[in-house]
Image 1 (tube, rainbow, N blue to C red):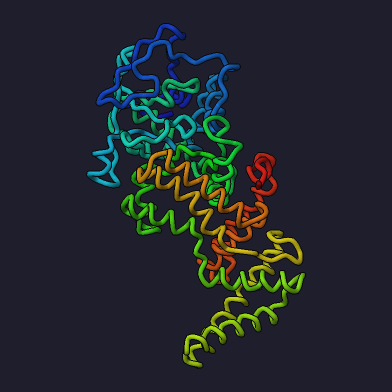
Image 2 (cartoon, rainbow, N blue to C red; image 1 turned 90 degrees about the horizontal axis):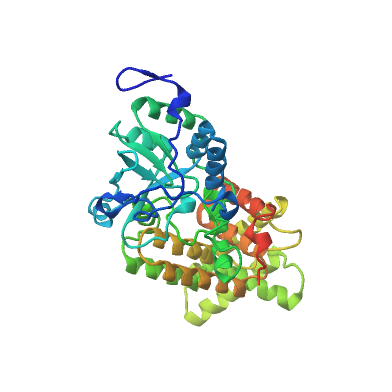
Length: 437
């Protein structure tokens, strides 16, 4: 039970109850305030089509639709508790105060109430310049609600739509659903079955970023990326990449697609050359000796100081030691087959380019056409550099570990190991359904 705003007790079943829209053909156009209404706003007759004509875009919308079909509103709210909810806001307001949100109600004349519409990720439109979207959990929606007279509209204009009163007592029941169910699902494979590519070059390029998508529990094939919401995507790029402008985003994309692996890549390339010359595995001692010979030859040609040269050799030998220890752990954990080694760390750059394309779209540093072209480029350079998804994965994970992990084999490694195992075993994984070439 909960207490309503006039002191009445509200049964939890009533707090979860949805008021259903009229039958198809009886709806009136919904006029949104300030131009921000639900999909289908301004059109009449947008009632749910028969089940056979609609396939839910993702597991979230499927769960909502099935719960609605059963009239099981407790289950409906369980699904909402495990999902993120998005609401549009004017771009100018978002840019004026980055981090703030504006909630815009719309008038529903059919019931004579104002509603606030929230949307799940599978029914979001392609990102455009204006409006932008912010993202909240169900608990945060309940916490931030300010007007008991407003109603909550979930996915209005879609077959999984539902509408709920939102008094304090109702919202308290919503929150109880979130006490045991959280919207974050790290380590899981999430996909769009409708609205996202599942085959072809774009899908391949998106799958090059799938390790990070599984790690975060985000949709691996969402080309029309809203991610964590407009201002949160901007904050991500500012905090982790120092990107605050379109020009900086473009420059970062080019750097990643060039795959400048620096010393890591140079050292791995020397081992590849040795393997081609002598065949089979290259012993670490042979590798170290060859690297030292090359460094001394280059130093002599440049007239470098002997002490500096020997210090550089020691530094590179330490790097070789780190790589061989990581590879040993990779083999033990099934990331690398026995007697195999990592060819290149360029996947660490190309995989992040695939993600950077989508982050830039979510932050509105590009449009969807430019983001898609970038994803395709990431696909093509990856196919040139690697022979398989497994080789790509090992290169990406080694690059990530060399960058962050410091041989702790902590979360920077464990998260990727989990993601690799999901992507190489789940029957729905793009790494099993999309050919490498």
